[in-house]
Length: 185
Image (tube, rainbow, N blue to C red; front, side):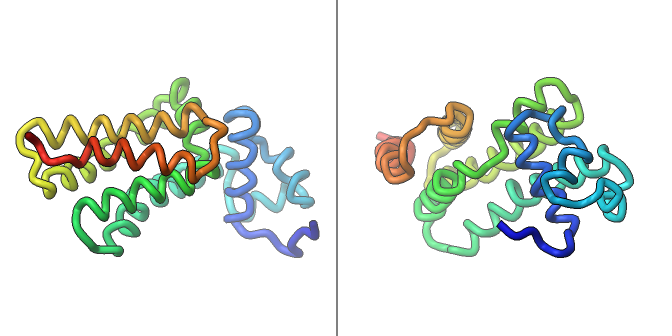
C-alpha cells in the first residue's frame, strides 16, 4: 500500500490507536509509529509536543466520537425511543469490531486519568440510555436498571471480542432488545 506523501495529525492518531490495540499503551511510541508511517519521528513534533500530547489527542478524539458524536448520530435519525435505542445498539454492534475501547479500558485499569475519562463517558452513555427508557415509559428504577443492563451487555460485546459475525450478533441482540424494551407488566 502506498503511503501518503504527507501526514496529518489524524494519521499519527490513527497509528497510535493501531499500536494501542496491538500492544497496549506501552506500544504507542513515536519512533515505532514513525516507522509504521514511513516518516521520521521528528515529523510527529509538528503536531504534538511529545508522546503525552499524542496520547491526550487520542483520548480527546475517542471521547468525542464515543460520547456526544455517537449520541448525536443516533438522535439525528429521530424516530421513537425504541427506534433510537435499536439504532444505537446496531451502530455499536456494527462498528464494535473496529473499536479501540477494549484496549482503552485495559489502559484505564492502570492510568487514573484514562479511568476518569472512561467514567465520564460511562455516565454520559448511561444517562442517554436511561433517558431513552424513560421516554419508553419505564418509571422509577425500571429505566435505570434497563439502561445499566443494556450498557453492560454492549460493553461485554466489546470486551469479550466474540468471533461471531455481525449479523449473528445482531440477531441475538434482537432478543435482548425485545426483553429490555418490553412494556412492564
